[in-house]
Image (cartoon, rainbow, N blue to C red; front, side, top):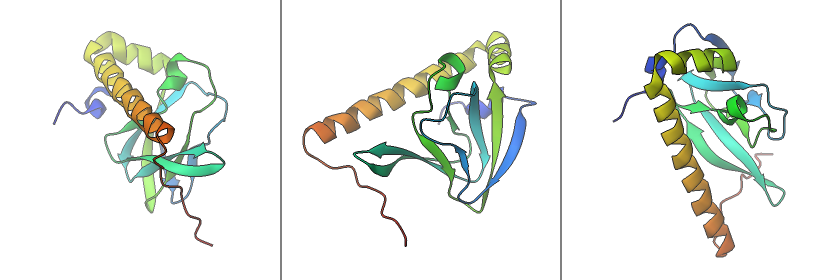
Length: 141
């Protein structure tokens, strides 16, 4: 496996979230922060045709919310904790640029992962366009 992006971050703020808590919601305003999963797991959910769907699961070592660091647009999805608890590292723009100056490979890993995610989203859009369905989340009432 490649280099873990967590190797590049030190001294970031860490917050513990409990099961079911959301780090942010789809369409929330950008807060200029990106996040890293240190422990626990999260799911990334997005609304399609009025139904919320899981588009990705995140485990320790994963990062999310990186678009907020470079573009002030509303959040594209919801990030929700799916384990008993999760420790999440929080990286602001100032720290982001500081890490990038001292560790240029950090930007390379971040960019590569972001491009892979975009390709995956394009694949999912192609499936939807061809009539294949992406499974919706069923509510547990």
